[in-house]
Image 1 (cartoon, rainbow, N blue to C red):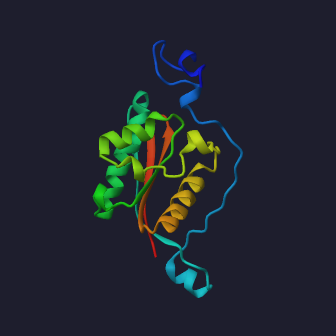
Image 2: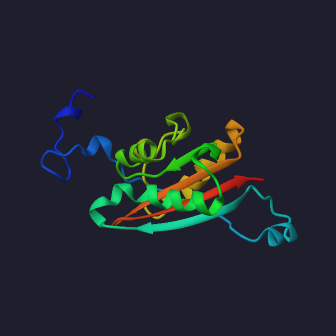
Length: 168
């Protein structure tokens, strides 16, 4: 901790993004089964949640840290939800500033965001981040008695995706 203030910024000479505020690349593998409700019932599969809406957003690459905000707004609008309707949020980040921007811009309560730690704390499994974020969100909703959640990924190059889900 004592070395953190002296770390070199990663991008801008006077920037604040350093190795201390960035996610570590970690190993990970995941599989999710997504199907129609009728198929799950016909096969006797348990149904954990339903996808209420999903969205994608892209804008200027230099503003990549703000892309999840726009993707989340689109997903909320499609779902007919407000920020207050959402029990928990998972906003994936390569840099800790991404969920902080989402909290500020959307008015998300810190106590509802990345409640088990985001990628900066848990690691960033390249190629499995979406599954990690969604499964973390669903497990947290179950553990805390919530029903509605929003997951978002900043996917680089100014792009992001978001998904609104509801436990069934």
